[in-house]
Amino acid sequence: MLDQFPMRQILNEEGQVIEGEQLPFSIEEVKRFYYLMLRARMLDKKSVNMQRQGRIGTYVQYEGQEAAQVGSAAALEDGDWMFPTYRDHAATLTFGHSMRNLLLNWRGRLEGGLPPEGVNIFPPAIPIASQLPHAAGAAWAEKKRGTDRVSLVYFGDGATSEGDFHEGLNFASVFQVPAVFFNQNNGFAISVPMEKQMHAKTIAQKGLGYDIPCERVDGNDITAVYTAVKEAVHRARSGGGPTLLEAVTWRYGAHTTADDPTKYRDQSESERRRETMDPLLRLERYLKHQDAWKDQWVSSLEEEISAEIEQAVEEMENYPEADISQLFDHVYDVPTWTLQEQIDEHLAVKGRNG
Image (tube, rainbow, N blue to C red; front, side, top):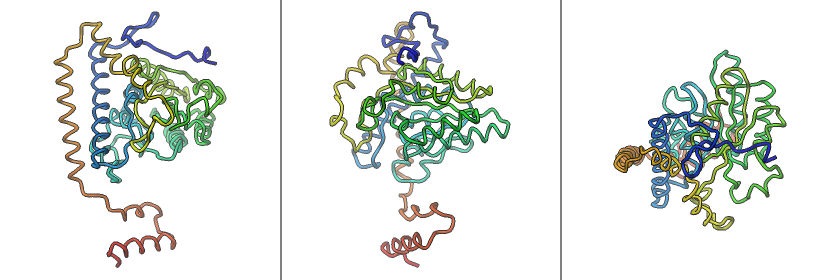
């Protein structure tokens, strides 16, 4: 099955275009990719540090997956739909989410799930795979409305063991909706390696059961990710139905800041991959091959991004603290008697009854 689903790659680990491929991007476009990935990585590192300092709550990091997230998000157009997981901040940031609101999410503010006006990003899904039927439904709605809008939905390898994964793909296949199902295969569903989670050798092959196009791509090669997603988006927009893409990648850190990955995997593998397969390093090597890498340029990018992040952090920390009573606000339109009892008890404890 691995032979049937070879991994698409354009730039190899040394930053060289592989034989038989062409890089369909200018130097400036490659630099833009680098900027977007660097921005995402610096925000991720800052967020991990803030969690360790107690300035935000438990945080879900993504360092190492920048090419998969940024490359896929960059392939969308304004008006398309994005359905992220709790980990896809690099994707949502690239698609236009507010950096401040991304940080507010980890301070317990409901505004963290609200994108800017006109940016179609669904609130991040915490239950595994629940966003796949949502994405299929939104794509079906756009099709029935006669628009050319596309849904792009993210999920990890563990999500493919959930019923929602199969229901989402089956619905999308039956109704030929304009959706792209984008799997980031990190090799682990929290602590469970892929080979213990499924007998299938690839996730891409699971699309065969639904008779939809399916492909594997090097998730650390942003040029290959962008190209594969752009093709899938174009097919969806043109009436060609859904696509399943498997981006094979590697996350350096833990599942969350509350997790210890040394309990279930050899972390020296992460250090090896930093030196060989890192998505930012790959573009750096390419730009150096093209005599287009300048240390001063990178320093200026880092300064610019640092200023943006610090401003977002300041806005986040100056935002009013979350009120725990908001937990009840959007459960039901009219609270049930059981819920009302909980609300009354909570308010009484806080000394605000009546």
